[in-house]
Amino acid sequence: MSEFLEKFGKKVKEYRKLKHLSQEQLAERINVSTNTISVLERGKTFIQYKNLTAICKVLEIKEVDLFDFSMGSKKTDKISEKINIKVKELSVPRQMQVLEIVNTFKSK
Image (cartoon, rainbow, N blue to C red):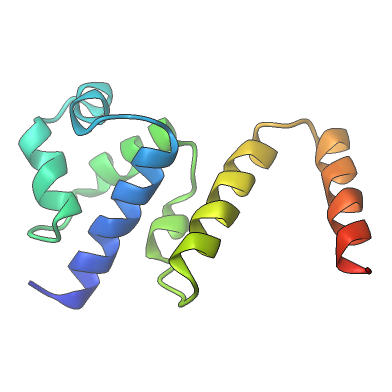
């Protein structure tokens, strides 16, 4: 198994879990088998483009998000991902308020 496929599969799994979806639920929403999601998340195979775009739509992420393998603390990364998902759901004015709050903490 290639390191790339393994990292890619882990990203799919992380984002799926952040949305509180089971493999079965994700599979149903993109019209593939649960086994397809399972082997993808385990890094055993790569994904067809049409399924990649469908997964991203369901998980409400951009395709590039699944290819960001930058290093960092897993706990910190998961917290950041959760924050990003929640912030993306907000209106632009609310996102600006969140940014102002974060900047307030950062300056202290």
